[in-house]
Image 1 (cartoon, rainbow, N blue to C red):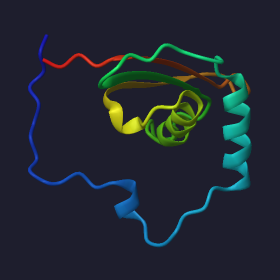
Image 2: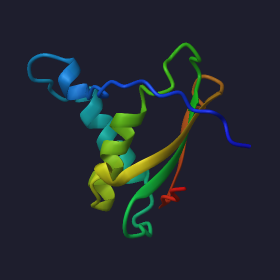
Image 3: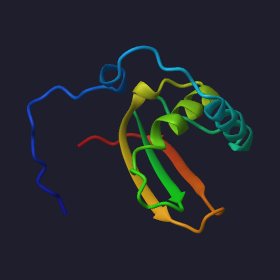
Length: 115
């Protein structure tokens, strides 16, 4: 089933354009990036060309925005697997309620399929 998409004629704003001044990685982010990098599979197969990602974030706080964990996670993925996240042209993102202390991340990376 194809859903009608609405078009808004405005240039999308990047995170870099949204905030003033330099942003620095917090010690908490550095710790997260190190731990995540160690937990990720050592290698994964990445196809050439545009990519599609699928992310599922198991969160205990459903009040958190679904897109908050994307950029930090994606930055660690690109550093670990040596690709530029600008290659990602499609994404499926879910947040799923889970018990506190049972939070998780599931992900898949495949070739993007454009119609």
